[in-house]
Amino acid sequence: MILFYQSNFELLGAADAAAVVPTAVTAASVFMFAWWVARSLQTGDLEQGNEWRFDVSRINDLRRNDSMYRLFQPVIRVLAQLNRGAFRDFLPNIYREIQAAGLPRTWLPEEYLAKLQLIGLLVSPFIIAGCVQWMGGFGIVMGVIFTFVFIILLRRNLRRKAMIRLTNIKRRMPFMLDLMTLLMEAGTTFLHALEQAVGEYRGHALSNEFARVLTDMNLGKTRRQAFESMRDRLQDDEITSIIGSMLQAEQLGTPLSGVFRTQADVLRMKRSQRAEAIAGEAAVKMLLPGVLVMAATVIVIIGPFALNFLIFGFNID
Image (cartoon, rainbow, N blue to C red; front, side, top):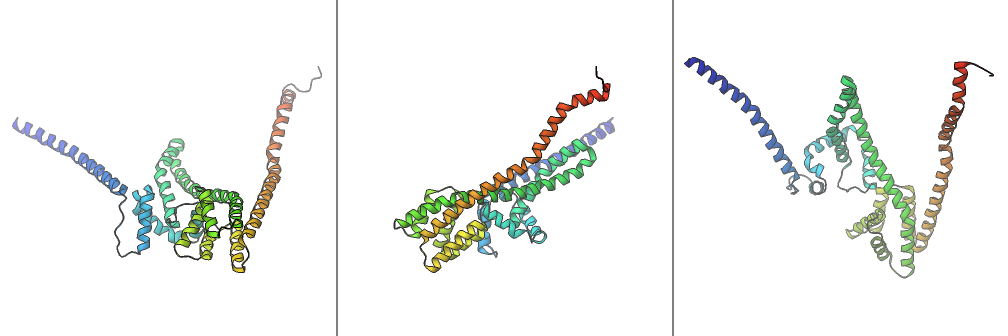
């Protein structure tokens, strides 16, 4: 009897120990995860080490302004290191789109691409689970394919943001040039006219770009260097033409007010030409839907007669 109770006690002790170990591991995992999240959410600056000072300042700015970078900084940096070698030829274009989309200048292209890849990896379990539930075992392969497609769509979304922002800048540019023309003809200097125009259109993408030009000049860049930086950021043909005319007028001594008026007229004319081109393309784009609608109408009208003929044959009565 004593041996029986002793064996039962040993079995109960082993069972309790077996139940305690997973619980302790789970509790430790939850504690470590909570500690990691709490540490990641802290926006404290990194200490200056042997790294380049600007890089540390850039990382600190990203940690303050982007919560995802703050949470997954080690993972993003590892993926960025891989992207430098795998997508070396695409990084300059991605950086131009980051600048044109108005994102913080502290983003490096490989880091922003790593952020998009990380978003895709975080969403991938849900995509794969949905595909497996829908298609069974083959859904794993389709889930991986859909994850890559999702990352590509995120990348295209960056390009779409850049195009929309450039379009908004070009739409507002003639009005800003008109305002600067009026101010300069009234006796205001170029810098003062630019400051007033930036204040008038505050919050718009065009105002933000010219505000960066003013900031660059206040930091010691020449007017030519500041506007060349703006041209390199946006890399649009119309904006490049305006900046080139402005720099050429400054070099030749031509009054900038006349240049601004001419460029504003040119932008309005190009805008009208784009509208006419879009209207001309609309007729071609509507051709296929029109044909499909006509075909559907013909089927709806003639279909009952055709079915009647196929079923009952030709009957005069």
